[in-house]
Amino acid sequence: MVFRVEESVLDKFFKNRESLIKQFKKGDITKKKFLEEHYKFIQRLNLKPFNNGIDSFEKGIYNYQYYNMLAKYSCMKSKGAKLQAKHPQLALRLQKDSQYYYSQKDNATVKLLEYLKFNNVEAYFIKVQSAFLKDKLFEIVLHDYDNVIFHSISSWLLQRLRDEGIFLEVRKKSVIDKYINEKY
Figure 1 (cartoon, rainbow, N blue to C red):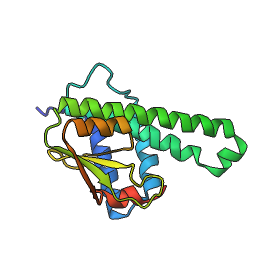
Figure 2: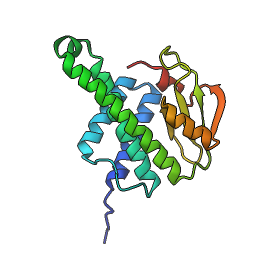
Figure 3: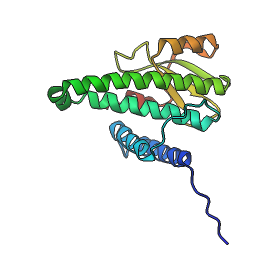
Figure 4: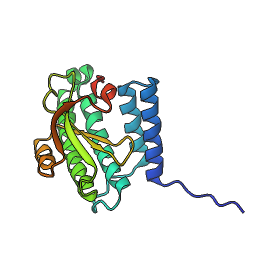
């Protein structure tokens, strides 16, 4: 008798995410394609964020990725020249959506870090090519997990990291420098 274990929705999410990361690292897809494919996959999953608290690492990561992807996708779409010319109100709405999703992503970051009790985590400003992000964008690295790197420009999140004693007052090259500095 053969038993088949059904793959969970979160397993599917992480498997797809790892596949996209590998494709991007190999140069098979661009950052824009990475964002589009990740966004489409999240939409197909039809899994909303977990709002009843974080009781597992996986749920915390999913919430971060969910909001991060919606924020980046909304931001990317809002910058489209055709959309801005033909539908400026929609472009503005997408920009506002992006800001909202980024704030939700920062909230998800803190909830996951609290769940992990801020253990084996470090954060620091990163070197970027973008003039807008210079001296604003910081990276949060979870050393106990592979490929788990968060980013933010949130001043309140930065202060929380400093208060927890995990923010290093240095500027480093990002662990995912190629991804960070590629435009989309």
